[in-house]
Image 1 (cartoon, rainbow, N blue to C red):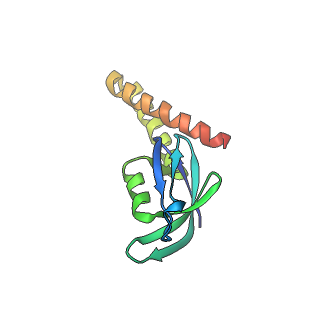
Image 2: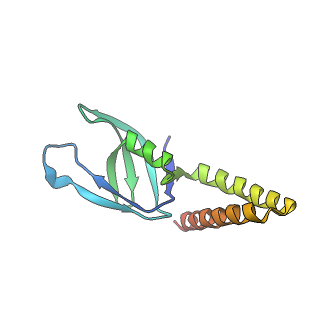
Length: 126
């Protein structure tokens, strides 16, 4: 089963080929709202570890599983499903703070909700 992910924060990623030639190395830019697919195809490279095939824009590259996990932990990327769940939760929290007239937390939740909605809108256009 493939997993669809969305970029929450812009960042760069160095794509390194696992072959001995350094000519296959290049920098890939991820922008907020970009989407990519993590496939089921995996491979193990001695002394490097596990890699998974990722379909990004016009590229299909192998990325280290550990690095993908870091991106999720650092909230640079998240799955489309997690994005929808976060938006749902933030809508609930905004409504809750409105009911309790908690102006400080309302501003925090509303700001985060607006940011995630922008990401969601860019994904919907894709």
